Image (cartoon, rainbow, N blue to C red; front, side):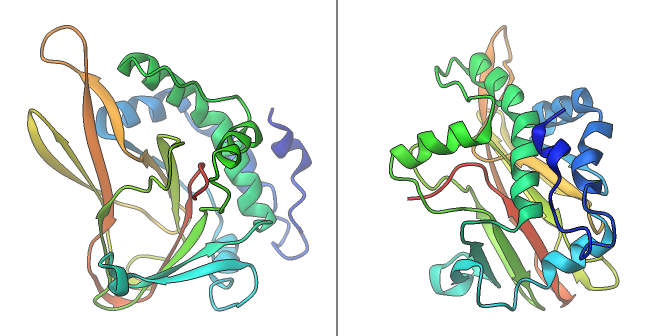
Length: 254
């Protein structure tokens, strides 16, 4: 078991005794099925990773001034409509522990992908060792973020690369409840390869996480061998309400 599951130091007085739920939930998932879904579709759902209370607590961080390094208004940069904030270090304890624990599960998948693609990069077992690699290359700004969408907002298809060192998988957690807090605003992925293009709409409920491809994934070639499939992700237009999502990216930014 990960030391982050053992330690689980998030303040249980504030989370109603549910502090370790998300971290211990990781052990209950079928990681073989998750890897298969990532390999076939570029994404996999981790249902009910966060409780309703935890979703509300993380969403409530957004209006605060402290704890963030920057705020981005998407329309100013051609990213879509809506806004998001990058967390500053130190991250909120729950998100920090989730980031570490998820990395432990995803690093072996990322290494298998690189072997299939003939990429020589290998990712260390622990997130801190990978972040040291990022920081030595000048990628020192934290990338976990929280996004806020209102009516008419959307996120253009994109890839979160940020620098030379890129971990090929990331995780987003839906903090709001579809149908009650908002309508529309579906998580969308596209893939492009020599065989054509495909779009995938991923249905999420409040507290669900989706692990997905940052840049490219391996896929079986027409003949023997492996081909690269380029992936992008975004969010469709919100029709009503307000939608919050937290994103856990494992590489830091320049």
